[in-house]
Image (spheres, rainbow over the protein chains, first blue to last red):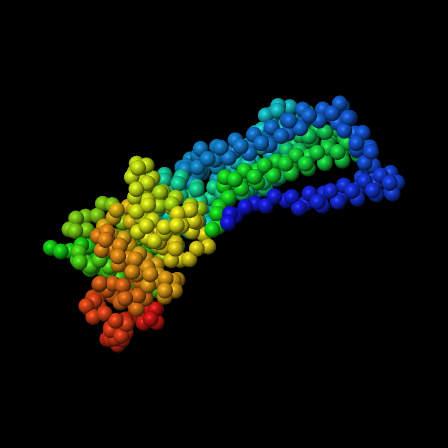
Length: 253
Length: 252
């Protein structure tokens, strides 16, 4: 039997039920209101989203930041895994200090400073996304390796493992699946933060779509873009979970 | 000279509070011969057996004294099987053993041959793809044992590994250890607080007493006289006659 992350497919039924409820109540029963738009207005807004709100290019901009950040941060963590796991080196101390420092500052404040320093540069999102993911992964790595029992290390060292082997083949391997299991959480957090940054920065990304829709008090567009964002996040998370189940799930036979 | 392992005047202390020193081992000395395939160090729980075993295995090198193997100073480490299960839970049986071969940088051909031999030897045949998670302590011990044998060491150290096992599992593993020790010419040094286990399994029993551990008393059972009754009598006479500093810390 394999330990798997279960896909939330049962929630799809809940979503379908909500959509039916929304169509029936907001299209046919309730009068126009500011809570949810009428379904036919949402349908009409799709055209506007593509033509006026440049939905495709904005989606690509947000998605590329999020997935680049996760992949790059994980890759860098993997490259430096031995230095990060084995204590007492400059790389580990620097990352530790960065993680400690970031723990007292709301991420959005760091984002504000990056926007101030780098202005309208597209790199702001990438820099923020990468460092956020990297620090989150590092904290998780620290947490999981510290929980690991000494008996594994004692046994491995007595069998001839040196410091490098212990870090790379024992400690890293033991926590690797916890790190991948953690990606969905990082993924959702990053989506929230990147949309906020895009909203503040106001030049590209889904955050800009939300900003413009709010500016024009365009409820159908706001609703449609929220729905599209949720679907993309759901698809991304499902892909991550599929990837985890296929390559990293730990058997509990 | 028929000595196999010579432990000479081992002194070990830990740093306590406010710069004080906590002496755990105070000039512990003993020897085992090449005929002692299974030796048990019998001492109460929490008395420093694990410390002693870690020093012998080479995991702890901050001590005073000398350790000799067949008259020579030890340069390598000896496989150490801790009290808690140490088989890597994120790897299956095969991968657990393979990891050791990979650390030893063995060729693929050698790995294939030796791997199957070890799996068969330790009774893990048919379980190659099984993971240690949720498996019995006995199963996990077999994996640890297979890995320890993979190193081709003359000595394997076991730190109270049978503590959490039931009687039937223990008996199976005792027989396995007895067989492996003779077939592979491997000596086992076991730390235990369990008196019946020590008398059942060992050719040599060394009781280490006092606090800190210092005095070593050889209380080996006569292996020529077999039978439960004999072992019971041995234990009884041991408990009646030996002044152990805290008898309640032994498992009887």
